[in-house]
Length: 54
Image 1 (cartoon, rainbow, N blue to C red):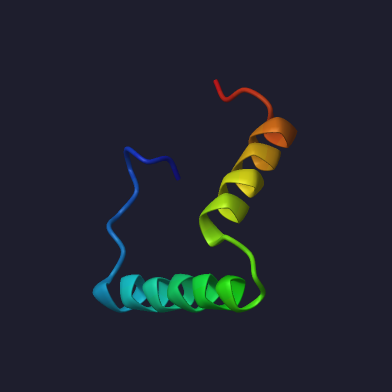
Image 2 (image 1 turned 60 degrees about the vertical axis):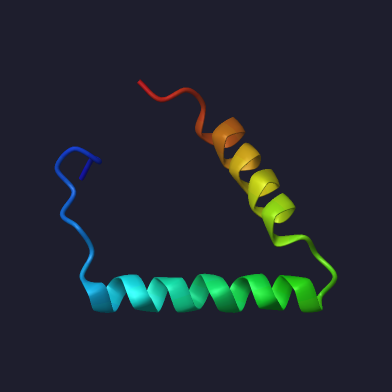
């Protein structure tokens, strides 16, 4: 499913994902990791592995 045809997430799913992201960011901080920098590096690694998107 692409972004043009994707249906909006339910409020319940959106809340659950938000809580998960909040918990992950707190875990990263407790481990001494900058969560924003970690996400940026993960995105770069994914883009490198996935290659260009048509």
